[in-house]
Length: 324
Image 1 (cartoon, rainbow, N blue to C red):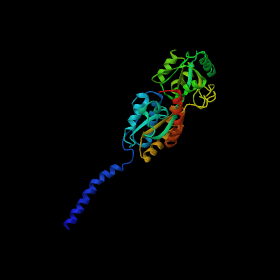
Image 2: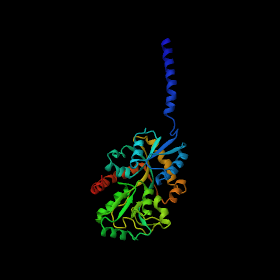
Image 3: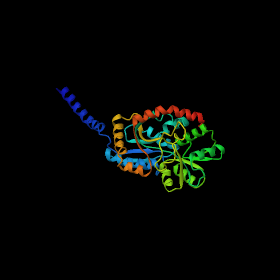
Image 4: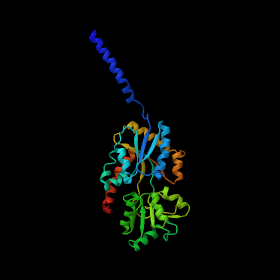
């Protein structure tokens, strides 16, 4: 009996100890604030839209979602911070397609970024336009292209960095056309457009958040969309495909988490994001529309497959161009 009493007491004691631990382990997600790390400066197009989406999602999941900026190395610092975080759903990240399609072939530290992530949802398209000042001599893409071909090395254009999607695509245009022009890399979209408006460069390739307002007030002229669709603000500017090329820019803005994030957590975050991305009346959709940004929704698993299917093509392009 004494032995039985001791065993029973031990069982009760163990149950008391295990109870709180079990309760903690089974606490519903999320039960504390969530952080999203973005590797860009505050105020950029992606930062603005991400913050609005985070506010919307926080209402759905019942916890604050805080956006933290960690700029540097073309977004790599932010990606690495997410990669090294616990896969518990409390540290998420912002990424663009070039982080997976371009960066790994240019920077060994970026290798394996897709494999070391859990994709959640894409929430807008990164569109790109070739723009010039309104007083530039070129009224159309054909005029700009012909001038560049006749004047090797005389034309320059700028993007927000070496190895960006717009840089890769436009250098592929140069390769196909036999054009020699000079690429100038700025630190970001704002600096690029300031350089163009200030007369320091001939042309620039940037997104809606940087150029739409200037297109509307007539300070810039759009010559071509590097995307698959024309822009509403410049309906007469052809797409790159309409201009005779069999390629276009592919760049999505997405939420992701570390590798091995539980599917239940990933799915919950994806559903929370999708609710507001798909709703044209949401604060997120309204903000994107006001900035001229094309809202898109792609679920994380589909997006992962799209990146995997395109990776080899980008590897080939980068190798052909000799970029390092």
